[in-house]
Image (cartoon, rainbow, N blue to C red; front, side, top):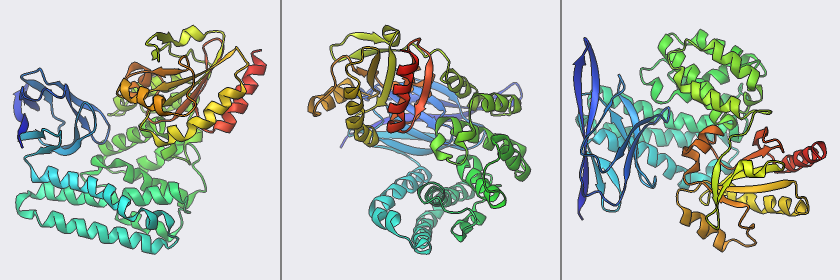
Length: 453
C-alpha cells in the first residue's frame, strides 16, 4: 500500500539571545485527497498549526517545553497523538486510507494510551456503569494501569528517561481522569468516601501536570469538599488552589484551565456552574488579569458575556434546505428558539422528537420560530439525515452552518458541546444561551410569549 508523507522538522533558532524552537513543515504534494492538516495542543485545544497541503513549507513556534498535540486531517475522522519537542525531526505519515502515524515510538505509545482507554470502556462498559462494587471497579482500572505500564516498560530501550516519565504520567492520568468522572459526575459519590482514596496518588506537582491539568483541579475539589459541604464561591475555590500549588506558573495555568473549562463545559463542574454568571466572571477577569495564561480565558470570557441575558444576540447567517441564506435578524419581532445539533450527535437526535412536538404545540403562533441549526461538517450529512427522518420539520426551520462549532457562529455563542439550546426574544436580545431542560424550556417560552404579547 502506498504511503504518503508529511515532513515536520524541528529546529532551534537563537534570536535576540533567547532560544526559540521553530517547526518547519514540508508537505508532500501527493496528499491531494485532503486540504488541511491540523495540529492542536491537547491540553488547551489551542491551534498550533493549520497547514494547507498546497504549501511547500510551513513554520510555527514550538512551546517552550515538550507538549502533547493532536494531529488530524480536515475531516477529523483520523487523529493521532504526538509529543512535540524542539530539536527533533518528526515525520508524520498518512496512508492512503488516511491512517496517521509518526516515526517515534513515544507517539505510538501515547496514542495507544488514548485509544486503549476508549477500547477498555467499550469492552467493560456494562460492568463499569452497572456495578455497585466500587472496590472491584477501582481494581479493574488498577489492573489496566499496570498492564499498560508493562507495555511502556517493554519499549524502555527506545525511550529516553524524560519521555518514559511522561508516558507513565499519562498512563496514570487517563485512569485517574475516568475515576474522577465516575465519582464526581456519574455517581455523585460523597467526597469523604474512601472511593476517592486514589487522589493521594495524583501528583499535582509533577513537571508534566500541564499535560493533564484537570486531574489536579479535581483533586483540589475533593480536598475542598472534604472540609466544606459546598463550593462557597469560584474565587474561594481559586484561593484554595493558590494555597496548595507551590509552583506559581503551574498555579496560573491551573486557574486559567479551571475558568476556561467552567465557561466551555460547565457540566464538568456540577458543583460550581451555578456560581458562574456575568457578575462573577467580571470579578474573575479582574482577579486574573495578571495571570500568565490569561489569553486562554480572555476571548472565552468575551463570548460568554456577549451571550448572557439582555445582550444583543449575534446576527448569524445560515442556509435552509432550498439553499437560501437566512439571518437571525430576519426573525426580528418573533421569539426564536434555536436547537444546535449535528447528525453525528446521539443526544441531539434523541431530543429532536420532543422539540418537534413542542414546535407543533405552538404552530398556530406566528410570533415564535423554531430553528434547527445543523453544525455538521458536510452538507450532505445534514441533508441525508433529514431525508431519512420521519416527520422532518419544514425547510424554513432546518438550517445549516458548515462546521458551525468552529466558525464565528460557534465562537460568538460559545458552542463547545451539543445539543445546545438558545432562546432569543422579539427584540433580538438573548434570554438564555444555555438552556438545559426541554420541559423547562417550553415553560420559559410560554412565559416569554405572555410577557411579549
